[in-house]
Image (tube, rainbow, N blue to C red; front, top):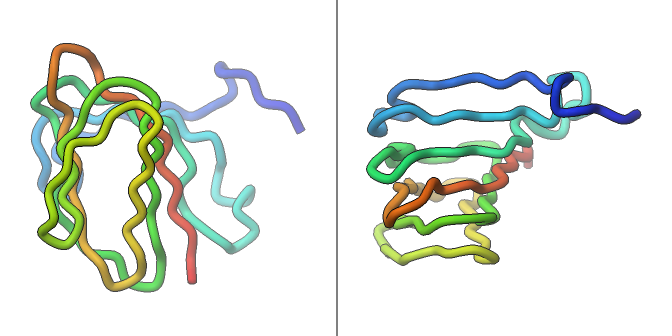
Length: 115
């Protein structure tokens, strides 16, 4: 299977997990593509000051691979700055948030897989 960008569902979400601003997600997979193993595989874009709010994972885990820009990432209360090439993983039972900072858009790949 090959998908072009035009084939991918793009959605804008306001206040994701009680975060700030608008998040744009280009979904690489549709539900049936996961074969029951996950629920999100997408490129996420947000402007500085926008965020995904602090939330917990139960029965799944989420990874963020930073493509471009800078972020403040809070993983279980440990706050770190992430930049291009960094990977953050929120395992089952853990909590996290991410906020775009700096001058340019934050772009990252998000993947949520079930346990």
